[in-house]
Length: 77
Image (cartoon, rainbow, N blue to C red):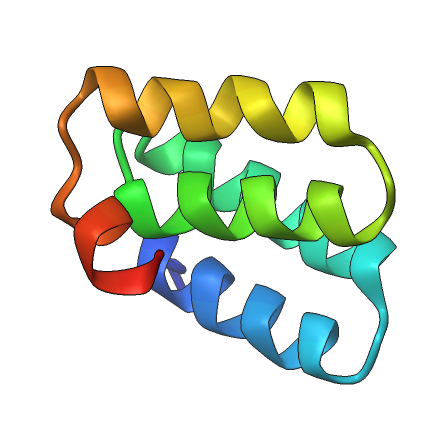
């Protein structure tokens, strides 16, 4: 079965919901390898990195979304 970026984002959400942030990030990276412009994956990666205490890298992803003028920033923040 060929997985889509959205499949990996959904799996990442499920992992994150269980507190399994390492697996969540692995799934996000798979999603981004398929679709590097996936705003939802970028947002989720930024949020999880922030939760894990990696503020510096989290900010990089939030800034990337800001640069892209992603509507997710207006909706979710």
